[in-house]
Amino acid sequence: MTLLKKSLVWAAPVIISIAALLLLFAENYSDVTEPPTEGWSRGIELGLTPTVTKPQLKSLKEGQLDVSYLTEKGVKKDTFNQDFELVSEETISIPVDKFTEFSWSGQNLIYSDYQSIFIGESGEKLSDISGFFPLKDQTLYSKDQELFKLDTDTLDPVSIMDLKNKNTEITVTETEQAAYIMTRTIDTNGNHLKFYEIDGKEVIELGKADFRVQGTEEINDLQFSVKDESYSLLVSTLQKQSAGGELTNFYYFAHSSFGEDPQLQKINFPDPHSRLELKEVSDIEMTMEENSVTLLFKGFGATKTTYADSPEFNIYKATLSLQGNTEVIRLSNTPSPSAKPVWFEGAEAAIWVDQGSDNKNKLMLSSANPSIIEQGDRMNQDVFIQSLGKTVGMFSTGMFSIVIAGLWFIWPLFFIVIITFSNSRAMDHNRSWIFYTGTVIYLAAAILFRDSMFTTRLMARAPEYLSFQGSSIIYLFGFALLTYLLLSYGVKERDWSVFIRLTYFIGVHVILVTVFFGPYLL
Image (cartoon, rainbow, N blue to C red; front, top):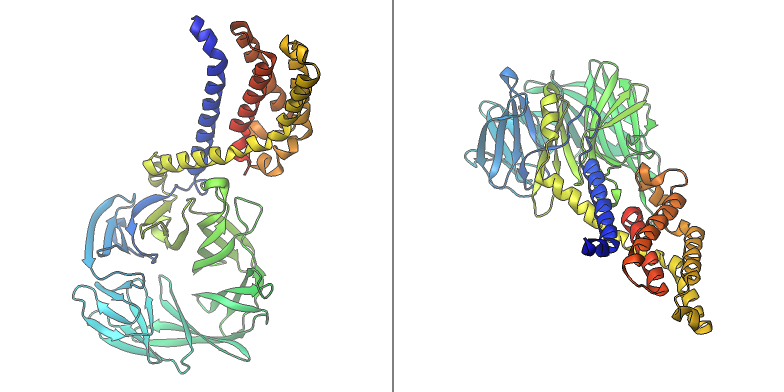
């Protein structure tokens, strides 16, 4: 019992520090496991892929779903039920590198190595290509200013369009009803678009459109969607602020009938989890509804899953009214850059690729399905490691607060030096007024220079129990009172000099500030 009393003066600060670290871990675990949006599951890993290539999805009978993606061995096709429980799996061996793309032409696997296309099972070369356009059940490719479609039964190429201009850009999209093509050519008069519908072994021209962008901007991406007799456009542009300046993205939307030129209006994508806007919106999948347009895309926005809560690429879904009003929700919330999202309409789910290191990218799923939400809520090793890593990182950088606290404890040290040389007898006789004067000087300095520690950034990042109005002063005095009580108990058990008492008071006080507030400093 005597040993316990003597050790309490040291054990109590250690126990309190451990409690602070456990609170920090619990908070980080809550941040790491935060669902992307209320009513949506956290990301669930479906498989590993060595490339950042969009997976191919297909709905089957009886509610089953096919997910095809690249692995190191080839193309893997996983079949899931509606709860995304694996029913069957199949792998077709093909050579895979960063240029590999694939599609299904009926039941036949077709893959591209960027220069040519091949039959998956046999590896037989079908044709050289200049462009590859995979769709859900058919394959398009371009060669020598012609656009071809593979016959789904014989795999014979069928020419469906002549590309008169060798610089023609091709964009392909599809709905449940049909597949559509948009061609774009550029000259001094602007951008010239043509829209086509694929009808069997030929294409039907739907309309033309022309538009221009501002001279200081260049088009970075152009997406379209078709419904009935109208089309929608989403134009992403880049503007360079200065010769060596930062690139800025702008986004324009238009909805028009065929035969009319688009009237582009600038839009933005508000970050649903911050007061800022999403940046670098790309990998867009666009679908036109009755009175709106739905966009699935990756964007650079807020997340608390990363160290220091730095922004990261995640997957978002936006609904644009035909007037250009935007509503955005987040569908992924992971610390890794997310890319290549695909929407699974029948399953109310999104699938994407989380980029990792050493070509170990994860194929991820998020869904509004209650059973998927339940699966996502389970703790796993990755979540524990992410939470622990974030905690250790924050605590390590929090040690910098000890340096900042030097502005507080340098003044009582000066006081001790002055007393030592001017009134050494007071030090020799351990006058208590020296301790109390030193603590008052220390606390006065802490209050005076508290803004150097309790910065605006720190208070914005810290949880509510640390960042309420006046919390910095309350905690400074609260920690001081706690330290004084521990010290008073320790003095009864030990014969400490005033210098040791003052050193203990300042040291423990700084440690308490460091373990509670330090992790949010940087």
